[in-house]
Length: 78
Image 1 (cartoon, one colour):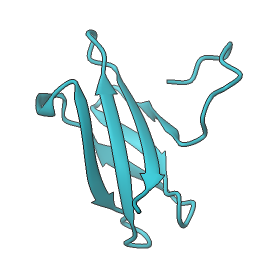
Image 2 (spheres, one colour):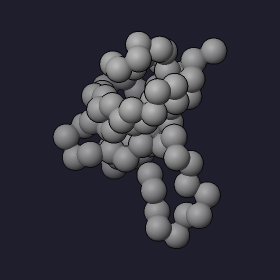
Image 3 (cartoon, rainbow, N blue to C red):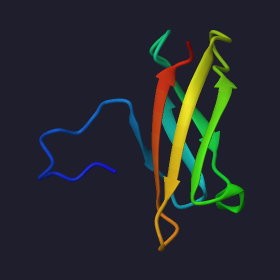
């Protein structure tokens, strides 16, 4: 998650909203897309999901901390 003191913030990280979703930026088309997160899948998750706008695949890396907050990183799927 972005911290104002963190100068190395990666633009591909997403901010978690309180309703269990995150807004990510597609690495292909640049559009912002809201995705639903499910902590029930485990503390560390990796999966592929397609962009709702351009339909190209992303590799998502999701990590939940002990408080349930999530860090989401999206990459172009190879």
